[in-house]
Length: 236
Picture 1 (cartoon, rainbow, N blue to C red):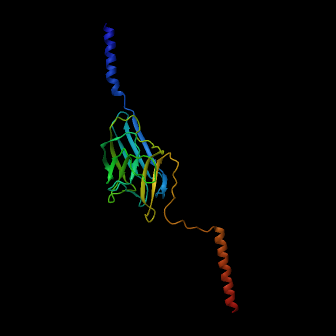
Picture 2: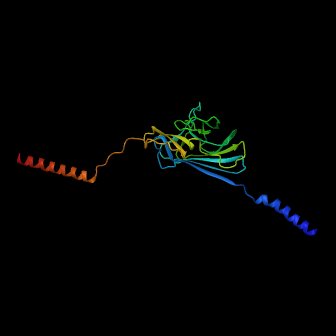
Picture 3: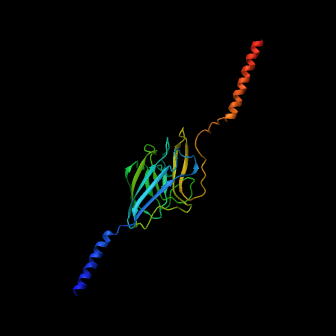
């Protein structure tokens, strides 16, 4: 009897301590926007934008950090007063609550950060994007900026909520102010879609530099021209 009581006590102690030692399964994902879908290539090296999401299985919330890595005058705006076109958007497989997006640090979206089950206008990029961010003209998201958001979900997470849409894109952003004059823009995406094809860098075509051989021939031509003119003056 005494032995049974001891074993029962050990079992109860194990059941009490074990849950405390079992850590929740972490969720960590990185989204790199490194493909030009259409328009001009942003200034700087890809990825031009990154998004980092962290949470844990069973949690109803998570943290999303947005970062801008371009150079020059590049910026993201979008989400006008009519919310017609997004600045930066994602596709989620789980709905956010209506009050589930809170910016806690950095350059927050000035014109809205919202979830829309019907999707947002992502310009030429096809597929559903239901989580969007937009910045106001007076507070654009520019090179070197970052923003941190706490996201609250209606249901506990079972895994990474950021997935690819039916066109194989997980995120899209409209980058403006590209080029030396800042008058070009491009739609940047992340995912495994295969229909992307931007127009390349913005600005004037590069100046063609003559090859060394051509420069040498040009130099000899100038030399002979000079000799001819000098001899002509001498005999005249």
